Amino acid sequence: MEALQKQVALLNGVVKPLASMPAPTGLQPLMAHFAGGVFPAGVIHEMVVTTQQQQAATHGFLAGVIAQCLPANGVVVWVGTGLQVFPAGLAYWGLQPHKHIFIQPQNAKQVNWVIEEALQCSGITAVVASSSTAISFTNSRRFQLAAEKTNVTGFIQTQNSTGQANACYSRWLVQPAKSIAIQGLPGVGSVAWQVQLQKIRNGKVGKWQVQWAASEQLLVVPTVQQLIPPVTIPIKKYA
Image (cartoon, rainbow, N blue to C red; front, side):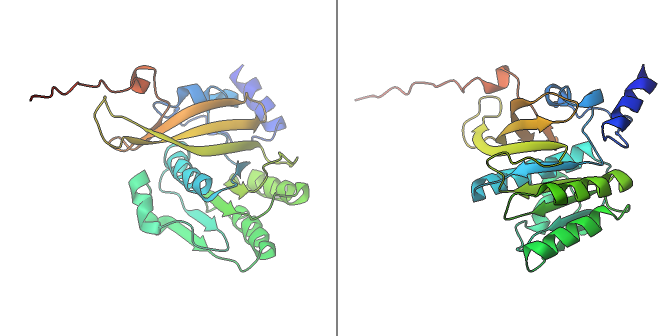
């Protein structure tokens, strides 16, 4: 059965699924929506971004995904017309900043060229790119074919708010959410997002609230107990 599942995955575009990598702690509810229960590698994931707030949330979520779901100590290429990530801040997410390459093309045409060239380099683990428009079917197909050959995972941020059809393996929408209190303590809690999987090949769509457990450096789908609001202690007033 395992051999048959791998053959089916190959026929559906999953060239080299990371079956040997265990599911990240705390993300089992999300991983259950993927074929084989592992994060799809060697494919193109579309990340829908329409506001700066969504872009910041998407970058944080992707940093956690790259740190947990892809091979450790890999090289990551960030592509965009402007510098949108503070390199030193990647350490907060358990990544090594010196293994990240930032490329800033001058226009959309150059962005697409750099994305394809980076995806064709087998020495790279992932490519994270920002596009000011929706990705065309032609470009998405070229990116997908390049990723399948080298097993490089691509995350393309686009303005595809209408769900325009393309050849990407999945489509995500990440939005900022209210921070989650840590064990009911007051103050700012753990970073959290509303993560929606809008399209997925060989899997199931879904929606989750995901948080970053900074003390353990891992992404977690909170349990019901974690979402219970903190207890309010009344303050007595004396005359």
